[in-house]
Amino acid sequence: MRVPIGARRTTLAGGTALLLTLALSPSAGAHAGHPAGARGSLVLVGGGLKADNTQVYGEIIRRAGGASARIGVITASSVPASQDPHAADPDTCNNSACNGAYYAGLFERHGAADAQWIPVDLDHIANADSDAVVRQVNSMTGFFFGGGDQYRYVTTLLNGSAHTDSKVLAAIRAKLAAGAVVAGSSAGAQITAGADMVTGGDSYEGLRDGSSPGYFDDATRLAHLPAGGFGFLHSGLIDTHTGAYGREGRALRLAADTGHDRVYALEENTALIVEAPRTPHERLAVLGPRGVAVLDLRQARTARSSTGAWSLTGARYHYLTDGDRYDPNRWRVLPGPGKRLLIPASATPVPANADVFRSAANPAGVPYSFLATARALAAGSTQRTATATTFESGPRFAVTFSKPSGFTAWTQDGTAAQTIVGMRIAVAPQ
Image: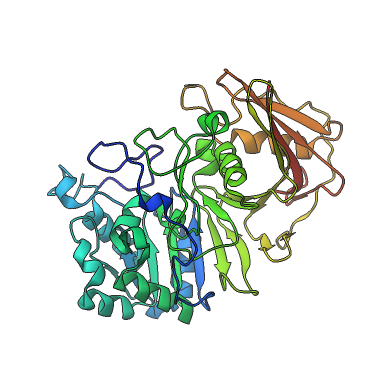
């Protein structure tokens, strides 16, 4: 089968541009009647979860009961079999059923006692209120939401403009509240968000044009659902594939437009683990080979130039890697065991960066461009600021990175900035 990893640009089948009534629904009360917090945990992956990632698969299984773990796999964000021309070929299929079987097999190979596809998708929407499927959900000790298009989760597991839970989603929510683990990758991580869940968009177009409520076939257009996703996590917006696709710009613009003061920007093949979400005891940790950026907009301010171009100052940027922890209630980064303060020693100037958000229009663009500039500045002994620009012009945006008082970087090898705490970010038209 073609492994689902979360495409850079996805649209719903059918090809019509949509501005959805649901997107305009107020988020308040969307999950009324459900417990505000959870005893369980979330394991949120930024997409691109590799089959051999024993760290992340093992952590999900451990939290679901170890050798007795029973994992329910939900892949309703994939196209259904009826829309997959390769549905009959197990080697090339890429639909909800075959993707569910793929993930179920992976969980069992990584040590789960059992893993089963939960048969809800665009071909089986009625199953979301099936008592038989609810019984299947209630027999599970953990859940995994696969990648694809997060809006398909909205249309299959939530009830229309009311944005209320189907029976299956209500059962999963109750299991989480009682202590189960809920994991997801790419769209499966995005859908756990509360109000203003992102539905699409690229960084440059987002900075230039701002965000819009809805879902659009133009996947470069920065869009969000005000009513949000499932609301499992409320302490920040969520974005995925961040460094691989250069989404830091869109994350900053969406948060500023919608009044959010924090974003969790998840990298590929790496998990953000959330203990006791939506409680005073919520704690986060990073697990995997890459990292998670935390964008802090509490002191951020936006403005317009004389030509109407948007700008932002005062955002803070943290970058957490394997073993690092984060206390969302105190806004505090706790570097992981074995890491020590980096003493900047490099006198090499920060390399020029003319494509800070890895534009899809630039065939020479490289992933993790924004992070590379931040790390180079963190390791330098002389520069206090560095500027990188967008590939596109009209206007061209400049991103200024700076090391204010209180900035720190942490290392394991003595030279590289694995963890970054308190870098300042500003975005302005040139």
